Length: 304
Image 1: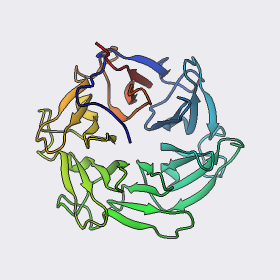
Image 2 (image 1 turned 180 degrees about the vertical axis):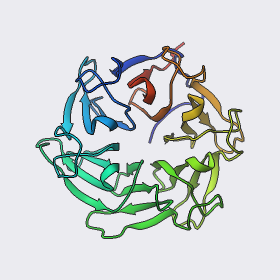
Image 3 (image 1 turned 120 degrees about the vertical axis):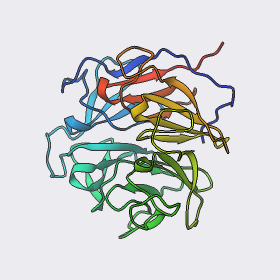
Image 4 (image 1 turned 180 degrees about the horizontal axis):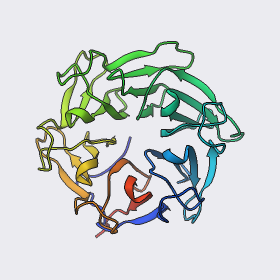
């Protein structure tokens, strides 16, 4: 669990840690990156979506290394088609990849990464998460649900949504990012409803923990949010995509506060342009996939 103080703040200006050299397929470039993850060695794995590959960026590197999908767009097991998210499975030393365009979830070894294996089929997912017990949580855009899978599962178990597309508390509309806490509560970005929902274990409906006041740019609203992370206090951090900002919503708050971005869509170090996913490293520095700027930005903790 992310251990962040309620008083923690981040620098308003960021540094580029991956990409940032224009849109392209060079090893120092990205093409509309969606998701990312970071391992215990601070290696960043980027779902370089429209280059149909996963790229590894080591700390301080000026170029990345392709670790999955180096064979162009396709549906072979050594190819990817618009991968949208990636997580590290430390226990098996592998990457779990949402291969969105092929409607599948793949496992790709970090040691022998020439090809992957399909572990879940028939799923259109923008968001995946793994808990400490090795369960995989997968949001499904088409089915408006989140399912929990364990190794060998054939169908998984619905843990959020699953009651058709809609805006009731037991429904979702275009789920994107997903996060699971130590109590197996599922947080899912309900993008089409401009809100983040929390579904406690075995709940029949969710509760709104961010947004839910309609589409907009006020501090009580979100506009097509995408990624979500939750800290040990239960504070919700959300990539508020179309407002070009990252927000923090404390428990039971009806309003969030902008922690970075929020200065209009742009290329400045204090700006974001369609931020999609976010994460924190062990030092609580904040990383953001800055979609339209084709870069990954790091906002360091403000120690003042």
